[in-house]
Image 1 (cartoon, one colour):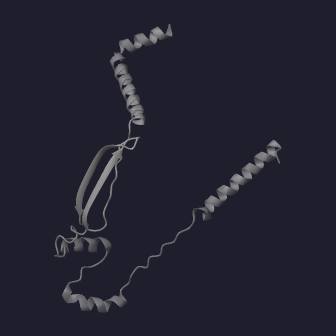
Image 2 (cartoon, helix red, strand yellow):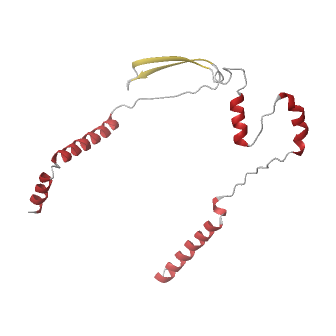
Length: 161
């Protein structure tokens, strides 16, 4: 009786197409997931060269018996410094933005001697990096001590001591 009531409510609300679509999506998702376990995965590799030059890669795919199934090759050139040295002119606009954002100043060549003489009297923030192990924090110690006390108290109440 309950099943008929639920089914009639589903029909009245026109949920049948929605439920069928949802069921199909679930079946497709499960099939796609299971197919991934049984299909041979593709090998994908990436290499980022650190030095400028030409590069060549060649690969051969072998089957279980050791016979060649296929070959592929690729060649490319890389020049990591090319973008940096694209223009030899200084980017004054970028330098001004960086100086303003970091609290620095842009010193023209004519005032370089004055800037060098003023360096000893300039205030420079000193930055020190401090690292403290997580276990040396007071709250961690208190938590560990509370766990120890709770475990001891539970053992005493249960008579396991």
